[in-house]
Image (cartoon, each protein chain N blue to C red):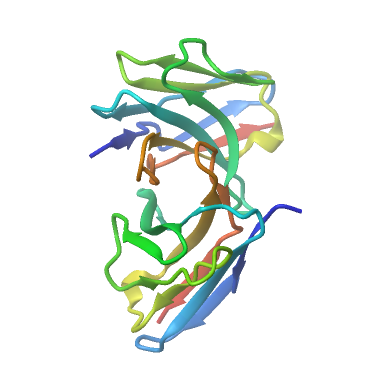
Length: 111
Length: 116
């Protein structure tokens, strides 16, 4: 089954404790992105990647890192999480000219 | 930069009624896609319908159709014969086409409730 898999689905953690949200897709898609969803703001792009080792900033990249060492994986790293990064996060992937496939979302709470 | 505006934060209709969700966008691009996504309480992002800007014909998917007015930069979603399962948050989104264009720009969302 074609899918984008994010882990964990839920995480409660504390300020400053490094965390990684994993994202994996099994569709051999070139493009992958991370978004965060906040009430009243819709979804905003954090980072995106056009292929292995090619990444770039989206609209709200501060406080986040990504890497794309393999085509299928695109982890999101919060080196020193802060409460303003409490949000719902989505990973997405797609092929050129096709709509995005979204993961099921990760609810992060930073205390 | 592109912006997408959904001016209706919440809407509520009775089951079987028709409802129209509004979306306007601002861009200087000529080649782009527009989308409507549905987010039910399960939080999944589900593609409802998409429209290529170069196509004049409005897209239709079963009970869902759009009214795409390119000159007015308007992209509304009409849901006919609404059902309880249509209750969700709906997002309008824009994507520029072309090399390096990878970003979906979303509106703020409209929370739609279908009442029995």
